Image 1 (tube, rainbow, N blue to C red):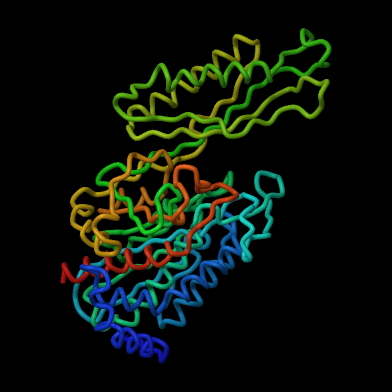
Image 2: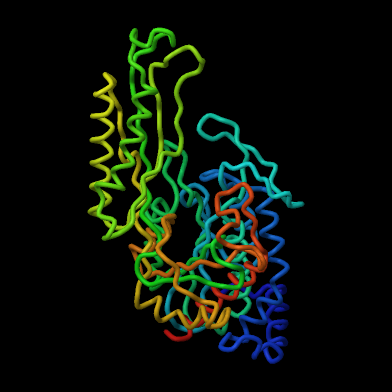
Amino acid sequence: MRIARRPGSVMLMLALAAAFAADAQEVPGQRPEVTAAAKQLQSKVVDWRRDFHQHPELSNREQRTAAKVAEHLRALGLQPRTGIAHHGVVAIIKGGKPGPKIGLRADMDALPVTEQTGLPFASKATASYRGETVGVMHACGHDAHTGILMGVAEALVAMKDELPGEIMLIFQPAEEGPPAGEDGGASMMLAEGLFKDFKPEAVFGLHVFSSVPVGQIAVRQGPLMAASDSFSIKVIGRQTHGSRPWGGVDPIVATADLIGTAQTIVSRRSDLAKQPAVVTFGAIKGGIRYNIIPDDVEMVGTIRTFDEEMRQKIFADLKNVSEHVAAAHGARVEAKVPDTDGNPATVNDPALTARMLPSLQAAVGKDNVFEPPLQMGAEDFSFYAKEVPSMFFFVGATAAGTDPATAPSNHSPQFLLDEKSLDVGFRALMQVALDYLHAGS
């Protein structure tokens, strides 16, 4: 059953049509409907992003964000599915003409980071994370991704009668990883049948990135971002008075030795001529008082790889180091390496990426699209890319005049997004979607 066009959509469609002629030559190769839509919706995208930024929510806790997204999609006349993988929201835009099926994805969750940007719409939110009260911040830019896709959705709905094909809008929770003991993210959405009744030919996603100047886009064929795995290691000793270390087994000293020795896994045991790899300890917790040697010390960390054989070897090496170093100190370990199913490497389909490169160049100009080096950061967009050909690209987030090499990075409490990146991301995603749909019709 076809849904009647809402008055707001009619107004937007007319506004876009009126702007086409004036804007057609603004960027060489850019579709005039993209240029017009970007101008019409820019302020809305900014407002949505600021609202989400001021009200961030941790992974698997995105109730308000999901409700706002679903409300917007319903106002456009769509029929969103909600509650997928806890708080995922999905809607289908059906074009008026036959054509291909594609997916567009945005992530919605924030991080346990206390904001230090000083923005007038800075987050003051707090939440519980790993048993502690923490600040919550969109320190990675997912607020921008959500706002961009909401704008793209509105623009595509306004022109849907002329669109060939169908577009799946994927608003995903828990990209940063679900809390301990929970499932979530892209893998859970797929497990709950995301592509069961609608399997796209291609899926596209983007990420604002502090290492890229605003106005530029970075994309590469093949591997782009690393596989990400977490681990947890518990060193178990025997508690004693700090003045009598011989009366127990000191897990703190054993832990220090273990961490030092673990650095040789990458520096001396991994073939870095093949692909890069990283082993990082991110948190250590042990003891409560200055003069008590505790019973145990707990550690958590991450492993980043691109090659599956290297990935499995690092798992085995870290378990081996943990067990033997602890034993040398008279302690023992409980090592979970990895402790959950991690994300595979994010790999851009080479043929799809080559095909869509001109679309990205049309969004910002040919000279503003470049190939970045491999990124050790990870993305669970990788799960979609294992199901269908996909392309993921970076949108520059750092303001002109600021060196991206020294700008606060994604996940920093000072991460500062230049909102011009919202316009770039909108234009790029729109151009990619329209070029793919029209080429396949």
